[in-house]
Length: 322
Length: 260
Image 1 (cartoon, each protein chain N blue to C red):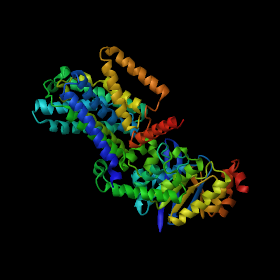
Image 2 (image 1 turned 180 degrees about the horizontal axis):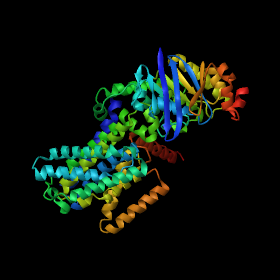
Image 3 (image 1 turned 60 degrees about the vertical axis):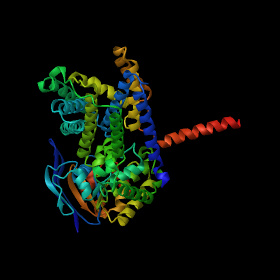
Image 4 (image 1 turned 90 degrees about the vertical axis):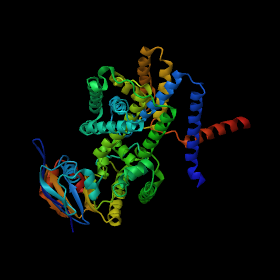
């Protein structure tokens, strides 16, 4: 019984330690404002990368519309709190819902498209969202929205990230997740196995979009100012690099990718021009030397640590006996 | 009981008539062979039956229900399963997951239990895993359960395709050239396997095959398709002596196989 729950208990413990360390760092003034911002950004990026991975990596639908979904979430959330004066939890619900609906709207008509064509169509969707937002005066036009309440703090980011990852992990580990994997592997065979491929393609879009919407709401309520131009293709590209570097089809890979690239970008903030060059280089290098990403389709689990521990233990033992 | 009735089925792709006025009656428990030269439209018939193509004219009735407008996954859930001529496994997934995905047509649960891992998630997952492992054991694939499907040897990949099709709980199994690429020894094993699963799972089977030894050794009734039309139907002996069939195959390498 204890053995069964041991991994869960250990995971909770690790999360609690991580949470406490950062919280102490923030409240104790050990972390500068710059790094606090980047830690929050890291959390938002983890949500974005893992949700994009659900669409691109696990279901195999190459989407480039993530910035669009995030923008829908960010602006909807901002309208709820800044314009309507409603509480923040409602903004999260509304933002995720609006982005999910956008997911259906994009998912359904683009279902017949594959590969490059789907990428182009979803890219177009992202641009449409941005241009439309720039032309709506209610959300401030090109100058965007200001005075969004700054309610996002470390606990909110932390809980959002943990819940998002848990949700995706549970989904992938379920029969519905397996259906998505089947669609990726061979959609013809998947149909013959009784998998409703239309449903699962749209479902992946909806879940991915809703989580991107959540990331958008968090983003808006941290910075308090949002402009349509921030949600350009470049943002999708950033997230895509995180997913590719981490490994398409690896959830923990997305976390690694998001942490790695957010940190790199934080160090390169002083030279923003070089940042995109570095991103492009990283993508090329990873495509040449490790096309499957750092983790490929593998996941970092407790067993990975056990194995590493075992290898380390064996190595140490060997040294002692020699 | 009549399990499958195909009535005046035709399918055209633009100006090309792939299937022309095709009729078929299959009784429950039948084992029917479908043969014909390359490009005769055999696989097209399977694609029409499984709903991948919609017929241009004609009707298909399966298990008492009209298949018009039904999606492939709905037809699978009604009890029709197939394998493919070119193997279409979920290559990067484990052998076990391949079977689990198919078993979803039989046992599944909602999205909420999946997201929150609340009942019936655990119970159903255990049930799915147990059934999938049992099926793999029957087919001697259990030791490979956690290997990637694409790393299996060719013969076992074919076997896994059949296993996976059976996991959907079919009444009618469509086998599209199951012996393609197999040596005589493997073909012989396949022959006994098909006989055995037919008994064990009480299946009705339609088989497309080029290997005549398999068709003649297995099927009670053989249909011959040429240029999309049915040119002969009968017992293997009748078919072998049918002048129309011999003409259709003349110059084709199968003639050699027939004489053996």
